Every structure is written in C-alpha cells, then in structure tokens.
Image (tube, rainbow, N blue to C red):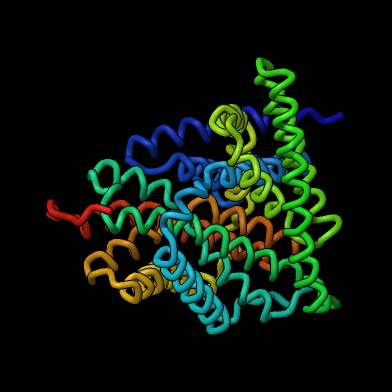
Length: 395
C-alpha cells in the first residue's frame, strides 16, 4: 500500500495555512493563499504533488461541506426584507455576466472537442461561472469602512443571497443537460421534482429534529452528525435520482437547517471541520489542476479578456439593476463593485463542471486567475467608490 497521500495531505495543510496567513496579512481572503499553495506545489511550479483519487474524493467532500455551509449562512429573513430591489439587481447581475462569459468563450473558441458535451454548453458554462458572487471580502471591507448599513451595503448583501440561488438554479439546469440524450422537458420536470422532494424531506427532517431536541436537549454534538448525514443524503439523492448537481442538494440541505435554532452551533462545528481539512484540500486541488505549460496564446488572450469581462459585467449588470430600482448613479456603482468578487463559489462551480465534462483542464488557469484578481481588486475598488461618502444614506 502506498502511503504518499499522508505526506501530501500534511504538505497541503501546512502550505495552505502558511500562505493563507500571508495573504490575510495583505488583507486578502485566505482562499487566495490556498490557491497559491496548490499552484506552487502542483505542475504549474514545483510539481511536488499530483492529483490522486484520495485527494479528489476529499476535495468532493470539501465542495459539499462548503455548499452546505453556504446554505446555512443564507439569511432567509434578509431575503424577505431585501425584496424586489435585490431580486432585480441579482437577476440582471446574473444575466449580463452569463451572456458576457458565453460571448467571450465563443469569440475565443475555447470549447474542447475532446469533451462529450457540445461547444454551446461549454460556452454557457463559462458564463455560469461568471455569475457567481462571493461577498465575504466585500462584507469585511464594508465593515472596515463602516458602510454595511448604508443603502448600497444592504442592497449588496440582499442581492448576493439571491444571486447564489439563481446561480444554483442555472448550474442545475446546465449540468442536467450535460448528457446529450437528455430531454429538456424531462430535465425541467426532474428539477421541479427535486425541489418538491427537498421540501417534503426538509419538513420531515425538521419534525424529526424537533422531536430529537425535545427528547435529548443536551446532546448538541449529535445535531452536527445528524445534520451532516442529512446533507450527504440530499446530495446523493440530487445526483442519483434527479440528475441535479450534488452541491445543489448540499446547498438546499443547508437552507433547510438554517431555520433551526441550532443553526449557529452547527455552522461553527462545520467551520472547524472545513478549516482543518476539507476546504484546504479542495482549494489546493484546484491549484494542482492548473498547468501553465498548456496555456497557448489563445488561452492567454482568453484569460485577460475573461478577467475584464468578469469585472465589467458585474458592475454593468448589478449597476443597471440598481438604477432600474431607483438607486442613484453612485449607489449603483457601489453595488456593482461590491458584487465583483467571485471567490470560492466560482471555484466550486468550475470543479463541478470539470467533473461533468463541461470545461477542459486547460481552462482552470484562466478561472483561477480570474478568481484571484477579482478577489484582490474588489476591496481596492470599494474603498475608491465609497471614498468620502460620510453622509451615505442608511437603509
């Protein structure tokens, strides 16, 4: 038996944490450090670690845990408060990047003939990657500037929540179409069927959870085990019975449990597991898949254009949605800039697409570069667009 995976795991954990601390000192999310660790250790630089079945499986669990936590983090009360304005901002902020990503992928002809899916689906999937928004860095920057409670800050938070849900629906639709023999009507029926199943199963889980809590109120650690089992079952059922991405099942499971009184406790426990093992392996594994030697001139041009499109489409799309809903030009610009960062959400979507044959391995480098640059540039631009706005309107 080969025990190299133990050494690889130790190197990944240490390197991601060290580089994560370095990037956090530079006021960037630690996810950037984890990505850099994968890039440095993998074929792109030192070529010390290669992908393996073990790392892939741990990485897949990492994706499921991250999406489950994203569901737990979703504040459904905030969704209700943000209302129509945030929905319109999010909707246009999803449509414009999707079309922009599709257009640039088509113009650069980055579809791979070696993949089982059609070129059109591959182009659409690039657009779906660009629809993702990760506002963790935005929230931290707004806190630092004291602008979280401004009208623009509230709109960013509400739109980001809805943006995630719209992105998940788009991802579900496209991944379901990855099989060329699939009937679109059947796909839509399965998606509706999954959400009906999720509602019924979620209500049953909620009833069981309350009963368990009334019988064993002090056994808090078991809530976490039961919740994780629920998450895994939802992820499995999504893929096995409905043809829906497993991460969609995990996200919905998180949404269901977000209504629980034990939500914060469960989140903290999962955050520990995520930080300690599965998240570092997932983010590092993304970097391990990047091979710079495979980047020809066409991919380099595509990388530059993808970064530009990723930045502009969020500013234009979300800004246009904000203007439509009566926000001022300055507020619309602030909202658009606040939605630029793609972060871990784009990486999760890209990873799922690669496993389903929707993007080729050579497109990992452009996506990673886009995530890193949008993550770095967002706080810089936020400080510019919020500068000297002492009298910003509060929500």
